[in-house]
Every structure is written in structure tokens, then in C-alpha cells.
Image 1 (cartoon, helix red, strand yellow):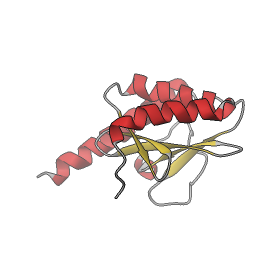
Image 2 (cartoon, rainbow, N blue to C red; image 1 turned 120 degrees about the vertical axis):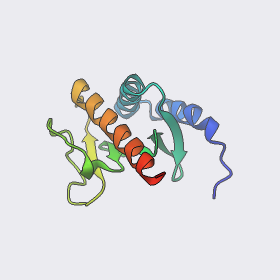
Image 3 (spheres, rainbow, N blue to C red; image 1 turned 45 degrees about the vertical axis):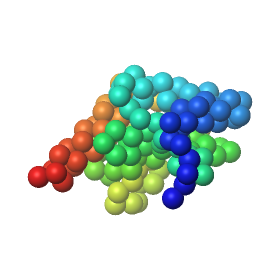
Image 4 (cartoon, one colour; image 1 turned 120 degrees about the horizontal axis):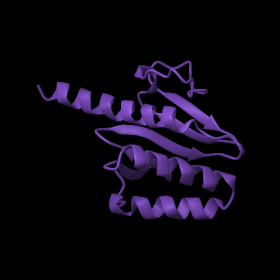
Length: 132
């Protein structure tokens, strides 16, 4: 278990965005803003040696950055309705789903907001069930 103080996570995410200094940082910053607009009470954490994670009642999604993509992996994405077809990666799994964003690509804001809210609701619903 890491001794990392999770209260530092927002600062670490700020630092990651600044360090990237390119389209990936800009994309991660935009996604982060959309997540906070959709879920003002969302918690930011920092896991797995430097991956930004957004949580509410459990992990909603991660924001990994690679050379060619910013990957938003939804922990329980396979259980979420995706009528807009945002999920375009990790489609073969039984649990996770991901959205790969390449340079110049943008997200459908209303569809992404709905997905974020649905992921949080799923987490919170499962939490309530487990407490019975």
C-alpha cells in the first residue's frame, strides 16, 4: 500500500497536465472539467504510479495518457448504456470499456456527461445494495 497522501491528487493531476504540455494535456484538462461539471462532488485520486482517477462511490474512470491517445477507462463501462457510441476501445472485456481520444478529437459533451452520471449512479446503487 502506498503512503501517498490522496489529498495531493488534484495537485498531481494539475502537474501531469502541465508536464504534458501538448494536446494530451489540453484534452485531459477538458475531460477533467467536464467530469467536475457533471459531478461536482467527484473525488480525484492518483493511482497505479501516476494515473488520474475520478471516483464517486467507486471508480468512475481513469485518465491515462499515451503517445497517440488519451484513454478514459470506465471501471464498469460494460454495464453502462452508451447510445451515442462513445466507447471505442476495450470493447471485448466483460467489465471495463474505454474511450480513446486522439489529437483533434472531441467528446460529445451531453453524451459524455450522461455516461459520467450513469457510472456514478451505478457505483452508488451497488454500494446501497451491498449495505443491506
